[in-house]
Length: 250
Ligand code: GLP
Image (tube, rainbow, N blue to C red):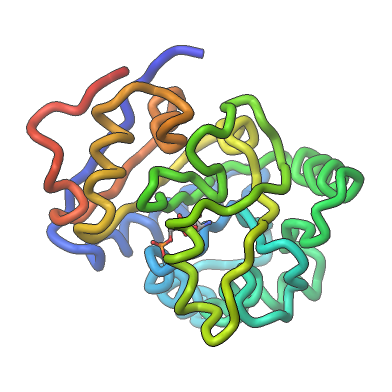
């Protein structure tokens, strides 16, 4: 795999990413097999809500769209609050209709090898993920691939890092945040035709610096985006504030 510089755009604010993300979805829908891999987390809430409006008002036609997502807390069925599918459906109800129609492929929350294999095969039958949206954890994680996860892994069950659980604490309070999740692997993510990673806010600045300026290394899982031939990184000024000038090609 060759090292490619991702396209990095530093935007005045997070809201400026919305039209760019919606344009990515429109471009996806011009593909023969438009399978979109959603990411969850606060980074994408405004986008999901904007997409919901576009779908509802028919400015983006959902008929051909197929959808999936990156990861799910272990044991969290699609209707369970706190889970990723629940979050996606709450912000973009069209995804729940797609789930009912069988055109939204949820990550299997049981995490068994057989269901993970079947999920992967289903994505392949649907033509593979064409556009994969990505956030980044404060510790540089991608999906729930925590630092140290080898780059060659596919879907797997993982134990969440302490910072990841801390960041999820408010989401689950007064319960404790989960300790395990089912996640697409780095190898899975790299198979997508296009990657669009978003990071907003000063808390992400060290992870963004490690992603773009450090080594391409499992110590910062997100650094692997530099090995993808078609990756776009959208940052607001705060997330970009530890970058100086050029971005390492790796
Ligand atoms: C979770 C998800 C990641 C996401 C991260 C960042 O850990 N598994 O895919 O990138 O949260 O979340 P936020 O956008 O809320 O900062």
